[in-house]
Length: 176
Image 1 (tube, helix red, strand yellow):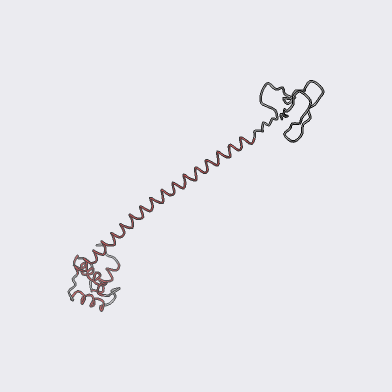
Image 2 (cartoon, one colour):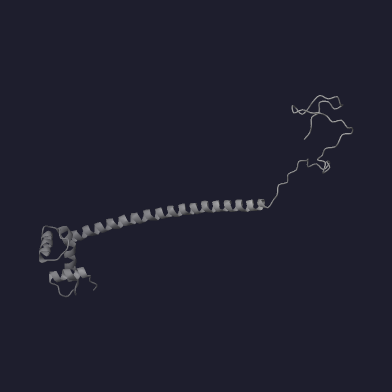
């Protein structure tokens, strides 16, 4: 028989030297079950045993004490099952939140990596700045301008880039 140290101690107080039958075990368990309802925290004297017997003689039986104990045990088990279900739900929510955070972090990392690679690629490029037109009809080197025949130049002013003149092309603007 498997007997705990507490049961051995109570057996000694009850006068049981060898716990070798179910009857001995029932006496020990009856004393242990009746100790709390009788107001005894720890059975350590013959007086405690008398208090437990008085408790049972007042109408409380071992079976009713055992039923109370089992009902409390059932309530505790139900409470722990509810807590376990709540923890499972909370764990699932935390796992989902963690996965969402990882996804956001990965998207941020991917964006930063694409930006960095794009910047590195553009860093080796040079700007293609030209003052002249991209048209092939204009000659390079002259900037697309052709000299006029004749030695007269058209004067112009800062207002509207035009000025009255006596040459044939009156009212034209300077194209820059």
